[in-house]
Length: 286
Image (cartoon, rainbow, N blue to C red; front, side, top):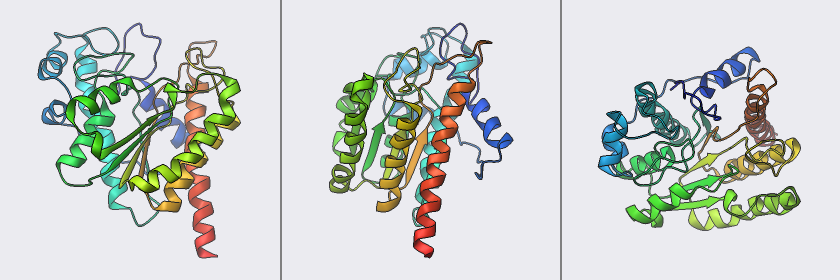
């Protein structure tokens, strides 16, 4: 899953290893599973064949604006991690299933073009795989990255899958710190909308770039981001909706060029999930 992205401002291609290392060093009570790679057929369900084959053959630019074969080799595993995580969540649907896929940029990739650090749309690759194989009939994609998931909408329109996929992207509506209260209220409102749709699995983009100090984002404080995640995980656990979250965006840099602040924001999402799961477990046992 890990590759060098070249001279990109995005750390997404190398972030999975850093988050995994931090989870282990801080003894988070999580289990690790290897991702099964997505197949070429998985990509072709939601992307133009010339685009897919061109990226894998090194003839078409990836989301980082280069034709790196190292990045090309990582792509089946980054999208594959979403598929693997979703299948794992579905297999545990009776036991508060919250699973993380340690992958990032997806939602800007359109039917036939890479964009914004996103080469292929792993959200739609996973959704189409699950629908094709009969794992589910209804999927919700809740995109809490700072940026609008334009590629997801493009693919939904071109593939005719919109009837099977509920998609909401916060980045289309919320951009400023003075919208934080409305942002959190909108998250609360999703519960009734999702209840009507009855998703069988939720794919949640838990981006770190909405953080108020992110150079490419900035609308929520650390505390508000924690509340965002608690609301999402809470509604999933209450309604027994299996949920998979990924890392999505995050672009803060340390003075030495590291991404410790971004990693900490992702760890905060793991902490929010664990708080909700443990609280639900205590309430059930009580």
